[in-house]
Length: 132
Image (cartoon, rainbow, N blue to C red; front, side, top):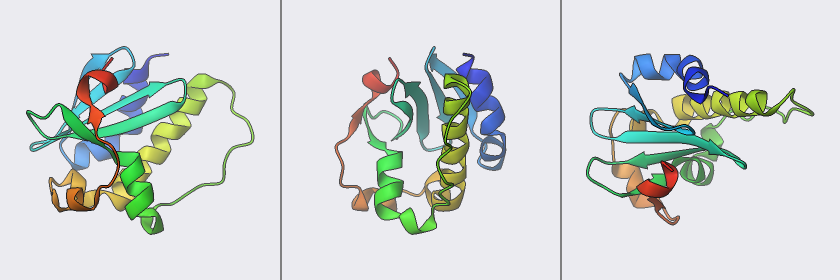
């Protein structure tokens, strides 16, 4: 699967609106660089993950855990698909949902605000692990 192409297409609106630049981190992870942060978006056998890092930090934040915990009322949740045609489609559907969640519930984060970090109550993620 060409994860970079799939992410490039799915996150086009988000990348354009927030001036995010894509960089490959590994075969299964991409960095989206903002001016004051970067997101690592990747996948593993459990699905897609999104982690937030400030420059110079090796410990970041699990964005999906935060959004579902603190901002679930803002998320647009589509009914689960009964079946997908394969793993690529499964990952594509997850990327679409994540892009939608970030656009509806994470605008302040994407704009560079950091006040949300005070409400974060999950374990931090390690940069080396999410980029592996």
